[in-house]
Amino acid sequence: MIKNSMLFVVCLVFLNSNAQEKKIWNETEKEKQERLAWWTHDRFGMFIHWGTYSMAARHEKVIKNEKMSEEHYKRYFDNFNPDLYNPTEWAKMAKAAGMKYAVITTKHHEGFSLFDSKYSEYKITKTPYGKDALKEWVDAFRAEGFKIGFYYSVIDWHHPDYTIDRVHPRAPKNDADYANLNKDRDMNVYRKFMKDQITELLTKYGKVDMLWLDFSFPGKNGKDSEDWDSVGLMKLVRKLQPAIIVNDRLDIKDYAGGWDFTTPEQFKVTEWPTDNGKKIPWETCQTFSGSWGYYRDELTWKDNKQLLVLLIESVSKGGNVLLNVGPTGRGEIDYRAQNALGKIGDWMKYNGKSIYGCTQAPAEFEVPENSILTYNPTTNRLYIHLIDYPLENFTLKGMKGKIKYVQFLHDNSEIKITKRQGFGAGAGEGLNENDVNLSIPVVKPNVVIPVIEIILN
Image (cartoon, rainbow, N blue to C red; front, side):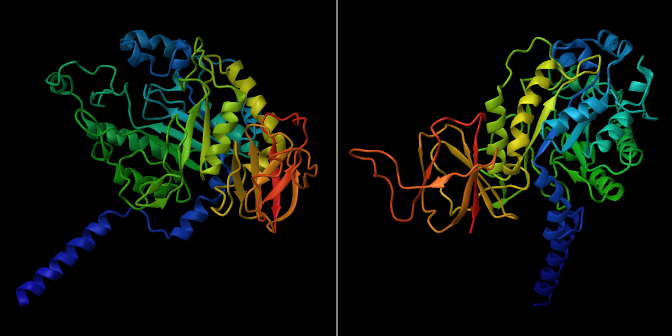
């Protein structure tokens, strides 16, 4: 009996020890919600992928895609001189589009640092440009009221101690060749370099609101949390910037405090993402076209309605959108992106209330046909986005007694509650005593996606 009791105690100690090992950050759920409150309110941000690959102008992974030698790729570093770089213009453009926060690539997979790092010679201050572009960016975006975020790739195809893996440009065709290629490389040296650079980023530029780390690829010839020392890295991040928000790409989803939000990339989710059955914070990162870096000849650009539907649908499922621009080698945002941002801004100017502070509508509200709902729990207002514009009658199922007032959001013009219009057989069908019919003008408002605002009782 005593032996069994001792075994029981040992098991408890072991379980408690494991529980301790799985915790990086002590925080209640309420405290986490408060820390993420600005982000879940703002909903819409700008992603910026900018590095020496913008000189090639054909994808941010051009070195990998074209199997370039390092010597060949160096020409982009040697000639990188973005003389038209004006981050204040970028910030004003993002602000006019309705974006509230921005995340920039401080270092992408190519290993080039957009900041003046004392731990690397492969940095912007060693190019013809010669200045710390990141500092200029931070100052400009802060001046326009943005929350700022830093993207940092834990992958590094330039560092001599970063081991070659299956996604590396030098990845061999035969598994047996990995050991020979990596015999003089030391991930311990690289891990220290990575932590030193992240320490610079989180101490030299004031308050950093978001850190976007990218990415883990576990499995054969891959890299996981052990390769990055993800636990140690996250402890460092939390210590240096306790209020920061961090994504989930370090392969430590099972650690409390190891991540704050999940990041579906380049697709629309079908429903609010969950973890162990619980809804979690999320943000989809998206491009205007297919690549993240500047791609001069890419033609698969999304149109305005596609982009707006992406934003509206994401908010309707409790999520955010981080929409990417890839500036050119001279430091300007692609004219196609500028045009697209302008159109988004035209819509957001009048309809942003249906995005900011909004989330998934309560289940009691039935989604009308060809529409998307968002809901603001603070103001108790329901927003109906008319993806396809209806003809005169617009029925709201089960809404009788729930509505105080109805209007179009873009101009606050009243929408009347009336009996269903029409004559002949079937004119009054489809309504029951708990339904409400809105009388919609025949002529569609001059808005690509009109929004009905319902002030609820």
